[in-house]
Length: 101
Image 1 (tube, one colour):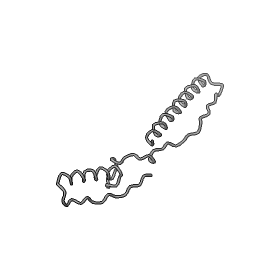
Image 2: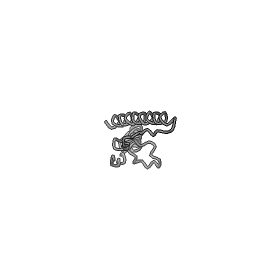
Image 3: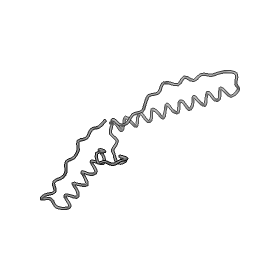
Image 4: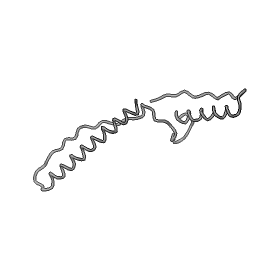
């Protein structure tokens, strides 16, 4: 989990109004990205490397049960779905690794 230190108030003495406005805007944006501005829903908070994860899942073991006519087709469909899920999980993990880099 990322940790951030609060940003002290910006001294505005001997500073032009436009400079003070720029520094205050930068300070506010950094605080929003860090989640230290007090925003209740933290909608502006940036995603940090440690905030992204996906829980692992055990391999799926599909088996065929005989005796029902369409059971093999159903097992094939479920196997296809399991393979698709595994592919999606690999894609998601690749994206997460790229975000963390």
